[in-house]
Image (cartoon, rainbow, N blue to C red; front, side, top):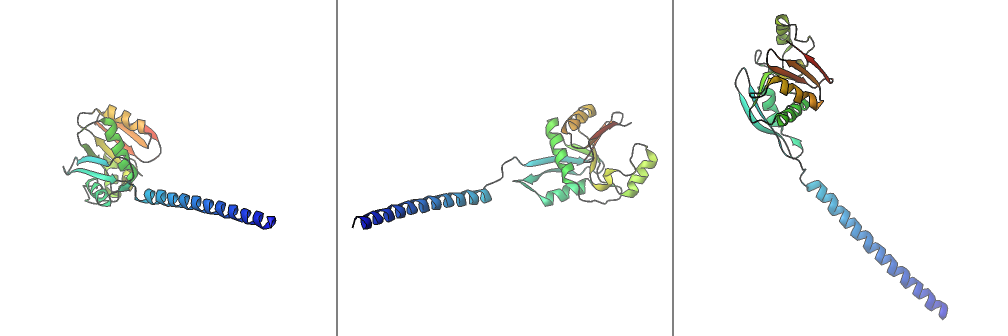
Amino acid sequence: MGDIKNETAKRRAFLRQTVKTAALAGACAASSNVAFASALTAPIHGPDRRLRLVNAHTWEKLDLVYWSQGFYVKENLREISHLMRDHRANESIEIDTRLIDNLHSLYKLLDTNERIHVLSGYRTKATNAKLRKRSNGVAKYSLHMEGRAVDLSVPGRHAKDIREAALSLKAGGVGYYASSGFVHIDTGNIRSWNGS
């Protein structure tokens, strides 16, 4: 009789422990599912990325958010690519998003409300070849032809200051053209040079 009571007590203790364990596991699973669901629906933190640009040849202007809540705004990227087109040939390609992000970072460092003046963005091979004939400062295999480079100036900011800000990004090539008053940035290897 004592053995039966002991066995019953053991079974009840085992069942109580099993129920507690199951309840705890269920609570953890529910908590985990809630956390997982929250991670899927929670907004991605970080401010929007905005650019203010003007094409120095066509005077087309943009003031737009191109990245929001963790995603590029494709339509606005197309507008940026169009503004940065080869105005001589009226052709465009998709501008490298790393270059666009570098422009945004540079703009923030310069702490200005002025638009970035795009002097040269994308160039067709034909345009690049023509410019090479006029200036020895144009590379034969320029990253402009890949949508990975831009020549720019910013009103109220000296080219030397733009150059220093661009160098601090450590995000690609930086060319300084003091006499012409502009800076080249690209998404190639980290390097710098002085042009004429």
